[in-house]
Length: 114
Image (cartoon, rainbow, N blue to C red; front, top):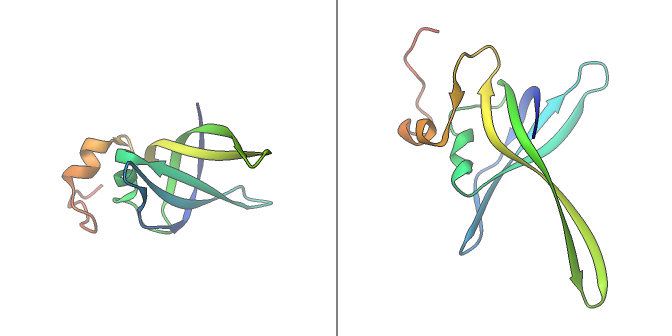
């Protein structure tokens, strides 16, 4: 488990990859002197975690680095993914969980003054 803070640069819609698998990707820009744009993904019920954030927001993501071996026609390949399991707004005192994200409809702003 790791975490990193950056700016949400690109926010993609969720994609139903197969009947049992859904994913959503985002690009986070990290670093000041030599900025990097890194692709992260959310899967299954975690896809809704991104609903309450917009491009340009500074966020902290908690992620797991995943790797897989894939073999087809006697050719072996390896794939990596960076899978988010929690998102926090930078400077916020609370975290976004799946239940909170589902409780607030997408596109609606929180009416709290802070």
